[in-house]
Amino acid sequence: MKLRIGTRKSPLAMWQAHKAQALLEENGYETEIIPISSEGDLKLSQPIYQLGITGVFTKTLDIALVNNQIDVAVHSLKDVPTLLANGLKLSACLERGDNRDIFITKSDDFFTKEKRTIATGSLRRRAFWLNQFPNDELVDLRGNVQLRIQKLIDNDWDAAIFAYAGLDRSEILQELKTKGLNYHFLPEMVSAPSQGIVGMVTRDDLDLSHISNKNAEKAALIERSFLRKLQGGCTAPIGGFAKILDNDQVEFKGVVLSLNGKQKIEVNETAAVADSQEFGTRMADICIEQGAAEMIKKIKKELNEA
Image (cartoon, rainbow, N blue to C red):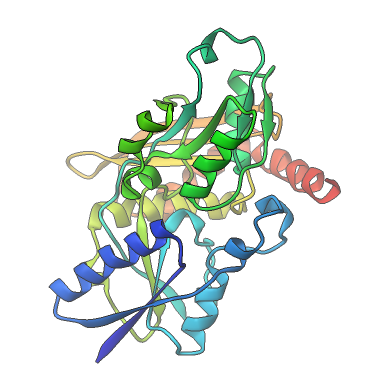
């Protein structure tokens, strides 16, 4: 049986598909890659939160899976909704890459400016940035990583925020200095749930769990159950990161922010974990006890009115 691997067409998505293909073929599967355009890739003029679609980058591939046009959909797992369509499942995870966010600057005077213009298409990154730098102006940024880098160069912006793994996997990090750009890590910014993890979604009749990276899978279950309980989609300013330690210990940090970054609810706990899903849900419950549900309800209302 030849497994048909569905992927978005961007260079980063193709990189992910080829990594998944290599893992599958190492385990004896015959494969082919089928590139498919997603709705999120086609509508670059609108901010993601205005598209009104859950799983804007994954929906087209999900439909192809349901219609038996492909057998495996390969995604950046942070883009995959926590509730999948009936008949589909998260079947395997690749080894996790670096989960951190970075910001890329254009000039040496960035750190001396009183007010700067920062580009990002993520409400989470926007909220975290405003939490630390409330005087800065935030503008929307869409497109694949190559296009976003070019937009940063072409516009009168001071910096843009990216996932480190995306630039590393696209082999762009090494080119930044030649473009007059520098990158800096954001240690205070909690990454999106599952950031840095490549996931393989299949129909229920295909089981790839035997090739899944168990640490990445455990972290993903914790982070995705945290996000699911909070009922936050990709548009909510929610961060969650589970660091798998030795002896089945897990260190988890989760954060919920208001859109303007002024309100912040967080949880930070290390525990022995037997049930990853239960642990993630419990971390969400702690945030809810601190007012996260009311904050998220307000965020959704503000976005609907925007």
